[in-house]
Image (cartoon, rainbow, N blue to C red; front, side):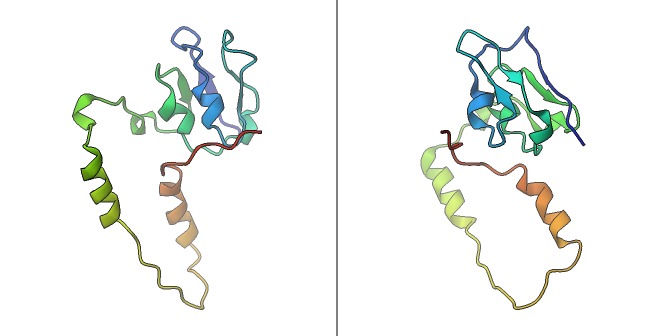
Length: 124
């Protein structure tokens, strides 16, 4: 399914963060004075990073639940030390088995994957 991705040109501030974070190169921007455009919607993997980084909230992917992408507020701020402690507590331990995963395991595991934080997008 090709996603319907929309950039609201009335609210877009042309920062181009969507272009910078998209791993699939869905967006293109000719220069800093031009608006980003949805050049390759068929490549979208519905990760939502473009929506999350857009400071003006100008991007909509109609096939995604936009309620998952609220605006950051001061109440959400957390001290760096507390955040690091939290992340240390969330470390996982993997116990690998020499057997196949159940058939539906991948589907249930892949949904939260789309919401996980990513590193910087490599650019050529």
